[in-house]
Image (cartoon, rainbow, N blue to C red; front, top):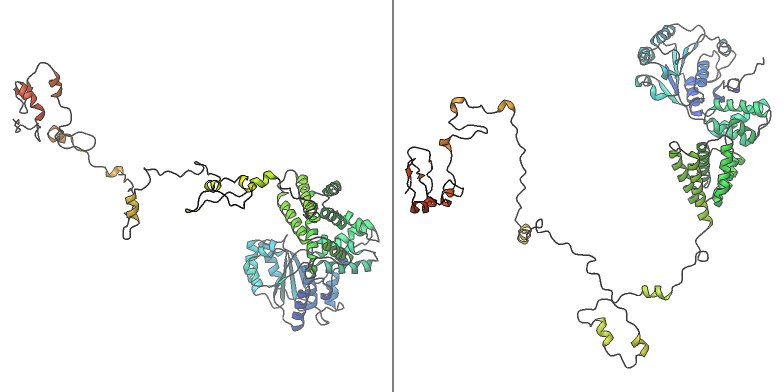
Length: 559
């Protein structure tokens, strides 16, 4: 069993000067140590693998050093040797992911009361502090706000937004940045030189880009590449090991698209799929490649490309051959496809369609519009006759075109001009644009229009119909008693005989059937007595008008 140690642990920074890509953090901490301005609580937040826990350990070691050299530890005193050997009693590390309950915080509070045996401070490093529960945070508030003079807390987290504001307000917050590709490549060169491994620039660039700003990830990939390639790192083998598409594939596909050769582009895409890569991975890499080419066209934006060495020169050379319109169109198409490929049922067809569209952009650039390649059509007699303008409408004092043809020409005019056919004015169709007829039912009258536009006339406002008020069952009128049947009743019941109004004369009466009968009969009078019917009485019957109350006993018949 060999004593192999991974590079992430073997080459872990032990001083502030060896920390990669966090100069703004290390400078602040060194100044605080030199001036003696130490806070009681710190919060280190940032992405994974950028040095949060490493800086916390270096800081804890430096403030407990018995013989410090400026802001750095001496690594010779008892405190430094105990820390390097992992037996220090002044530095405590707690994983909040597994110790996130209130009982764990109570145990931590009990440890805070113990005075350090060697050194000046007891440093408590709590990693992944965002994993603490809400009750644990609340139990930790009082101790974090007013700890003992010998206690210093260093909290580390990757998700700052999950920490409650009351904790944030009690800490000094330090935000760690992603490690740039240039810094990562420089540190990989140092490790390769220490291990005696040969390399090329493309291999180290590929590892640094694949790490996505995390040095721990970059060192893990470096160990994997060394295990596969041996003592010499070559770019194709490193790309095969890391399962990423190499730069040569994207450079070649870009040249094919710029030339408008979509056939070779589709064949290359099929080879990429055969190597085990998905269409989404290929499309995302090609989109990033087009973006880098666009940034490489100007020296002001060249620093936005995370490339170094010969690879940067290749990007600049290809960017000069591509136009800005072609790059903008390619980036737009690929970005649109990126949003659709997740919901697509046929991802390969979607990517192939996008590649053919980009190839069309390159073909339009290579085939400009020239008169030789696109000849204009010839003008024949039929098209010339169709393009002849129509005769204008004559003025009121001028003769019409027909009268002009019949007028004698001048003596000097030729016979060809006399016999030439004159263009006739085109008559518009009668029903081509018929005028809409007004509807008399809905159109206003002329006098209404005139009165509407007169000054001082205001139209009456439209009266809206009031909503019907429904009576509740509790407010219905009281029903009459049985003894009141002769009086006026409510509801649907009819009125009594004495309260009936007079009948109008235009309604049919009982006398009209008697006028049609051949034998006159006696008819009752208005007083109730029968009177003999006579022709005179019959004839004068329609002239009779009933009194106002014919059912009353005091009413008398009219003569």
